[in-house]
Figure 1: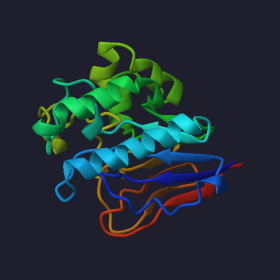
Figure 2: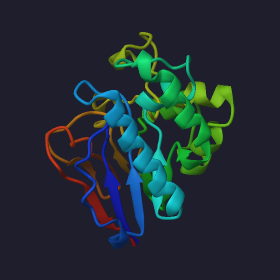
Figure 3: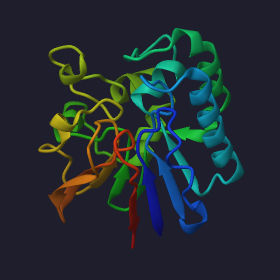
Length: 221
């Protein structure tokens, strides 16, 4: 399976020249909206184009939810910095009208894709054995969402909180990634795509589009 993963979009267009037909799966890591540089109309245009890709080819494209997405999808819950009040009604409607297009995670064997990643401490705190099936099922009820969208102390949450899969900071995952999985995540901006870990477990950070045009590609056996 030839897989392409695209880091946080935030209204950017430097992914649009990709030849999607060359890949079996194309995974957007989330954070389609909010930006300190791109205006609301442009963000809406780019977001709408991504929704159309998924609608037209649902088996090829995977749209993950990021922390900047859930505060519109579930507004007024799960607040996040960078919130655009003037765009809230439009973006909330787009997320809610297209709810079936989004998921919390995607997995192929030992490869797990989420917006921010899974730390072992967070998983053990909640008694979770990470999997895309579990995380996607947790989206359907409030208690599950509260766990998935937990914001840890490193990202402004309560002192005792540990970040869930849309908030986990690199400082929470690069030494404490969940064993036995190879994770691919966005969320924490990077100067280039980087991987930590070994053959038994790893995290690859792909939130690079603010600084460079680069994407994660791998043939998964």
